[in-house]
Length: 114
Image 1: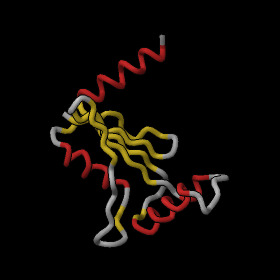
Image 2 (image 1 turned 90 degrees about the vertical axis):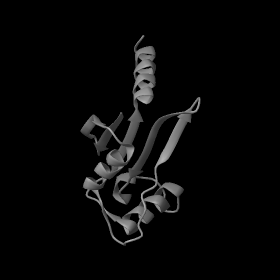
Image 3 (image 1 turned 30 degrees about the vertical axis):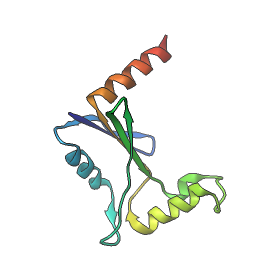
């Protein structure tokens, strides 16, 4: 199983929505953006621990949401590049976790709470 969490701005849009297939979870992210060109690619970073997939994540950031970040910074460059490649209404964070990733995240959260 794979679990999709999406935040838009400060709002939780979905939290650990289950999917049987990783590709279905990735495709569900497409509800929140539209490619401006046929070849636009949204890249995910994947985390593998002890040879097991844990999570993939990516974000779309509006330049306006960067606040005081200098316009020549890497963050601003990436936000401008994303705005050129995709139409999206607000900044988003997409996280896809495996069952192992959910377990690990819950363990870390309980350690922090103690």
